[in-house]
Length: 311
Image 1 (cartoon, rainbow, N blue to C red):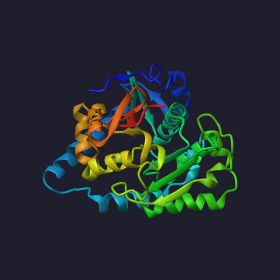
Image 2 (tube, rainbow, N blue to C red):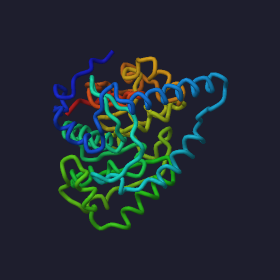
Image 3 (tube, rainbow, N blue to C red):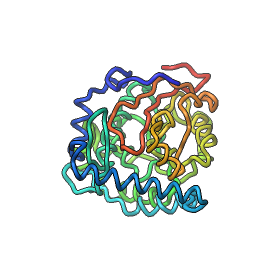
Image 4 (cartoon, helix red, strand yellow):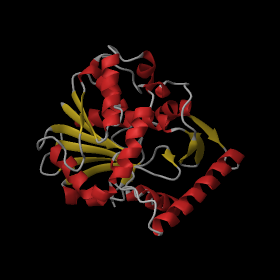
C-alpha cells in the first residue's frame, strides 16, 4: 500500500491549526457520550444495515441514471449562500478527526479541501487545470481567484450543475464578499472566475484531447463512478499532461466495517491507491489525516502521469 503521511508532514505541509480554523465555523465539537452524537450514530448505523440488506436483495441499485438524477436535482437546488461563514447549512452529520468528534456539514469539508487543492497546485505549478465532476463550480470559483494567471476548466455530467455555474458567472462581475471570505487564503482577482470554462461531459469519455491539462483533479466525484471506475481513471490520466490530484473514497480510507457497509450500500468507488499505476498514474503521496465523515473516508492522492517527469 502507498505510504500515507500526516498532513503537516506531507508535501502539502498544512498544519492542524489551519484545518481547524477552516473547518470549525461549520462544525461543533462534541463528546462521544453526547446524546446527539449517539443518536446520529445509531440512526446512521440502522440506515447502513437496512440499505445494505436492500442492496443484497437486489433493490436500491444506484446506476448512472439514478446518480445523474440525484446530482442534477441537488446542484439545481444548491444555493451559493450556504458557503457564507455563519450561514445556516444542511443538517450536520457525524465527523471524526483522530480522537475528536464533530457534528458538521460538508460545507466545512469543502472549505478545508480547497486548501488541499491550493497546495497541490502550488506543488505541480500547472498552467492549465481541469476539475472532473465540478458540480456547481464552487472549487473552481475560488481557485481561479487565488490563481488568476492559470487556465481553469470544469466538466460536469449534469446539466443542472453546469447551468448553476454558468448562471453564477452571468449574474456577477466580481466574486461576492461572502464567497471571497469563504476562500481559505482569500482571492487575488475577484473577477477571475468569469474566465472559467464549464462544459457538460462524461468522465468516461472526456471531451478533451490527450494531455490537454497540466493538472487534472477530482473531489468526491469519482465516488459516484464505481460502475465505470477504470474507464474514468484512464480518461483522467489521458487528458493529464503532468499530474492528477484526487480526494476520493479510496478503499485504503474505508477499511472499517461501517465504512465498508456504507460504500457497498451506495455502490461507491472502491479503487485502491496501489491500483493507479495500472491506469497510467504513479502515486507520489497519499494523505488521510484530516477531518472525515465518520461513515465515509477519503484519501488525497497526488499522482504523476507515468512517462512524464515530475516538475
